[in-house]
Image (cartoon, rainbow, N blue to C red; front, side):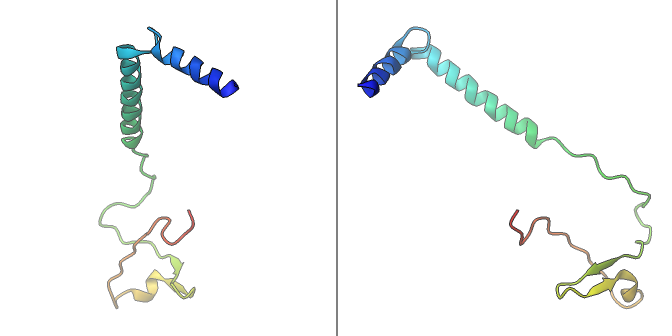
Length: 96
């Protein structure tokens, strides 16, 4: 009984002059357009780069990181021996 009343009320709402026909299409179109513009706006916000005293071309400061086996490795261990490439994979292989 209540479901039938809800259907009748919904049909009356959809077919009314305020929410039905071309006006409803305009409202839905405007809502979709607003969501798309909001998504584009949020996608274009660039965070400010972190402040640092380092400049392009300067030598990197010595630091220590763990390798894939968990053993600490210092940057100075490779001085004069090899080229070093440091790659960050943000949230790779994590649950987040």
